Structures are given as structure tokens and as C-alpha cells.
Image (cartoon, rainbow, N blue to C red; front, side, top):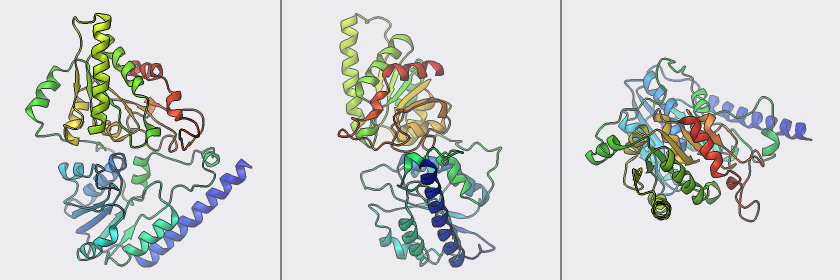
Length: 378
């Protein structure tokens, strides 16, 4: 039965992608001889954007003199986009944002640019009808050549399909690169990052850091959020045995950090650890993405939920232990340079956790599991 399910999903994916490819070939037959004006279409939050970074860098290197515009949406207005990183690193000239799926409001603005080429980097969780709708919308935008619309997964028989041999999924970084018809330069660092204009306060603290561990407690979904007490236990062990603690994240993560710090203070008093004690710093909701990357680079290790901050580690030499819920398939969303340090529950390949179903199986992972992985890093 599993074999039949795998065959069904494989055939359906092939049919859908062939239809999308055929339509793209009919509408956009060949690229123009000169490409001076490029549109890149890539949506998502920090993780989605960071995993597209090597592909967008490859496009910039292939077309160094072209004007490059990024069309992107983080979803809701209150969500953070990492797209500004592309501007700070000189990879794009302009960013056009839209929110809550309202891309149709930008019809005239996109159309008037007369783009020579458009690179579409489809969301790995997209479905066929959405891709078909977007394909027809883009066909009216006066773009001379476009490719990239595709589907990567289907909601049917997901756990069965994950058993396919060879494994059917690849890392998002590699998937985005393979969608290009450009060969990446193997001599160029995919995640090379230039960090300038760091505030004096952060520079001074970074110079004081003693074997620091970065902790990022945040996650978009509750089912992807490791129990706060696990991070507290990790912080205790690190402070006692290793060095300082640095908390990063958004405003809500700052509340987690404050709670953990308060518990650490109580623990210090209770255990009389008042001498030669390491420090902890709460940078949540106070740093830009560039400044956060700088703090990670100046730390010895990191532990985080499967969230944006974990992916920022790819721009640094600092390895991250990631606590990853089974919300998507293994490998796809691992921090690219720390794939050996990902901890996942072992119940299913993919599990839509809720309190009513399994009670959030991410907490099958215990703090000692995270500590063992951290000790491998240091």
C-alpha cells in the first residue's frame, strides 16, 4: 500500500509540474538577448528569504550590471521580512512589498517596469492551483521571459511519500539553486556577509563576551516552540560550565528571556553562585537583522527553535543546535551549515501537532538532548 501511495504522489507531482512547465514555455518562449531589468519573486519570512540568499546571489553574479527588483511578502504586515539583507549586501536595487496576498494591487506598478526576465522561486509548500493562478497573473505583466513556477509537495499521503527511496526532498537552499539555469561559482561563499555600522554599545558588549551561547526561544507556531524550561536548564548548564548567555529575537521572545533571566537570578541566590559568575544579555527586540548576525558571529554556539534566528547563523561561523518540530519534512529547513545539529521528534516524518492530537511532540526532545549536542560544538 505504501508503494502505491508513493507512486500516486510521484505521478501527480510530475503531471502538475509538466503542465506548469508547458504553459511557461508557451507564454515565454525564450529569454531576450540583453537582460538589464530583472524581477525576482520570492515570498516568506526570515527562513524562506535566507534559504533563497545563495540563489539570489548567483543571479546577481550572473547579471552584475542589471537592475534587480525583489517582489516579496512576509504574509501579514506585522511579520518580519529579512529582505532588507539583500539591499544591505548589494544584491538587489529595489524591494517591492505586498501583504496578505494582495499582489493584484501591484499589477500596474510591476507592469510598467517592462522586466526583461523574472525568476520565480516558488514556496516549497505551495500547491498546483496557486501556482497556476500566479502564472496567469504574471503572464499579463509584460515580462519578456519567466520561469520557475513549480510544486514540490502534495498534501496526500505525506508520511508515506517521505519513505520514498531515494529521499524525495532536498534542502531549500539547494532546491532554489537548482531552479536556476545558472551554474553557481564554486569559488564564491554562498553566505558571505559584510557587516558594517554596528552600534558602539553592541561592539563593546561583543568584546566582553566570554564563550557566549546565543539562545533564541521564538517560533511562529506554538507547536514549534520548545518548552521554556528546557532553555532555562540549558542556560543554567552553560553559565555554570561554559560562559555567557545572549538572548535574541522579537518582543515576545524578550518576555521569554526576561522570565529565564529572573529564574537564573533566583537560582544564583539559591545555590550561592555569586562569585566569578558569567553574564547574560537580553538583546531581544533591540537589534536589526545585521546586528543580530554580528552577535551570533561573536558567540561560540547557538541553540534555537526552528525559526528565523536559526537560519541567520548561516551567515556566520557559529554552529546552531536547532530544536525542530515535525511540521515539515527533515532536511528541508535545517540551518544550512548546521544540518548535523538538528534535533527532531521521532514519532512521524511529518506531524501537524496540536494539544488535542499529540500534545506537541517537540517536547519529546529533552533539555539533556540539547546539552549533549551543544557539547559537541564546544
